Image (cartoon, rainbow, N blue to C red; front, side, top):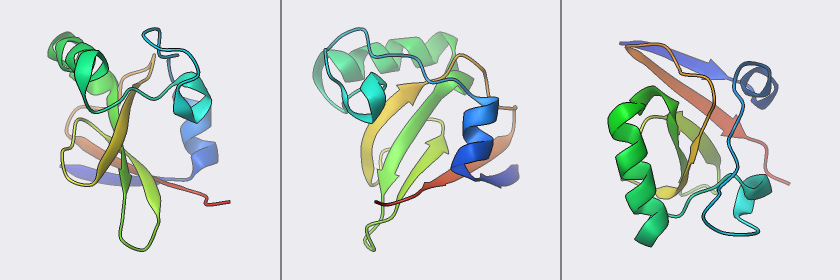
Length: 99
């Protein structure tokens, strides 16, 4: 498996997050899907057909946040979908700048 670390700028140039159509005013510019209920159910179904378009938003103990490719369960904050797929056998991590 190939591991890649991208900046948020590199991520933004390569991937396009899709708006959450299930709820209004979702976090992350209306792109985050929650980790429970109908949003989680939607992500699980979507990932069956499009596993390389699903990302997990994670949080670490030192208050850093990341986008990571694929569905993760540990330290998850939410999920989102991109229009573009990430590469097969690639693990991508994007550290988010904290304001």
